[in-house]
Length: 234
Image (cartoon, rainbow, N blue to C red; front, side, top):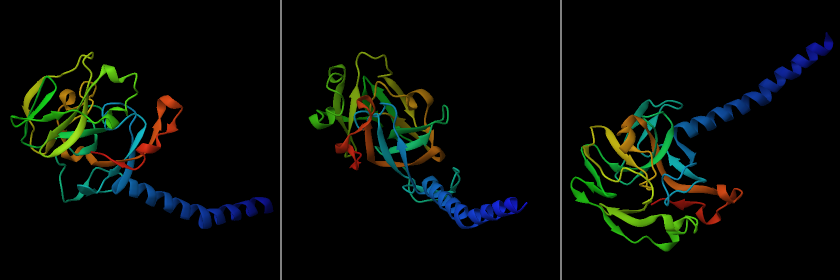
């Protein structure tokens, strides 16, 4: 009986002095990640060559608004996604968190013709992509792809095409509905994006991805790619 009482006393002391502060710390940490800032692992290649498999990107959840922690309820909004922003959002197809680039804003007329993007009838400009970015793709894979630097409205980012794949290279035109956004991956011929599941409602957008925090080479025994650590996303 005395042993049971002693055990209970020790257990209550642990809960009061150790477990409670630990629990509070964990809750604060998770609330911070839910409402302020987070990181997102990128397991697929839909954003190559900008983001490659094994990158973990920093997500600024205060870039556009403030939400109630652990929910999608908006407390306040002070900005909206801009064209060419890379955002994290919940897919309207299956609810999975995805990382894509904003291509079309509310009211925009979006069209793709042979992998060339047109927004409101204006074509994007394409120029050769710098070798440093191309080399983020393994050398043995590079001949299968075509690379370019895409510029629209003074913002430039890399894109990649794969001629051997069957893909929706011609799409639209469609007009983006009010309070929705058209998303595409930079890996244009191998991305499950708004061409398949439609535009994304503003309330589904979690935040803006602004940098690669860490990067692990999945094909190379998960060794770190040091040169990609803490690099800004274009």
